[in-house]
Image (cartoon, rainbow, N blue to C red; front, side, top):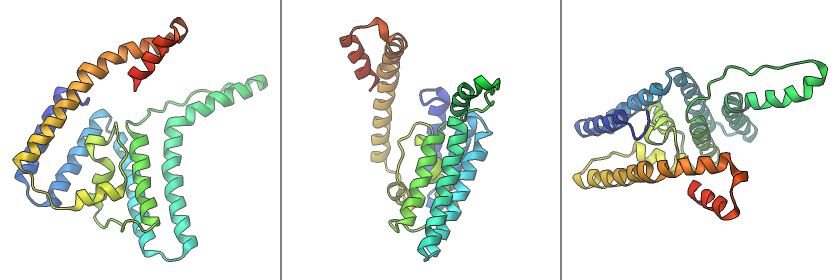
Length: 236
């Protein structure tokens, strides 16, 4: 579901209407979590298992870190979070990269390694580092462990920034999720203005520059330095 698609706009409108109708923050967060999981499952429902695994692991480790006083044990729990999350990221994002390098090394011995049929989950880098930021903050005692699984799961999977970032630290986003909120007409107008500006930049500026940038990057040897620098600036 692209951010510029009709489906996303309809989902956004439905979300806004639901948040207006539901006043209690607990139920608002539950609705936002369900919508976020629906948004993620729209890409591929199999990805839900992976994001749920990261969520459950770091939610449990966060609680253990808060209760644990022994320095060695706390380091072990933090390491468990790092190994789990980076291990999943490594398998799905870099496994075939390492296979390619091993294939070159093993070809003289007559061994031919084949690529694994691995589908890269959408947004895995973003939510992996975001959920790890939570365990790091709890480990440093810069943030209390989140008691509500719904609130923490929403922090990990919040759909507006799930698949394209930005990565937000738990100390910045979790308090906003947990704090009671009341939508006002001024807030909705400001949000609509920001969304419209962002949509314009994406559709009319970024998408049009993308074809120019892609062509230059794919044929870098054909262009002089000024054209290349222009493509680099357009990429940013």
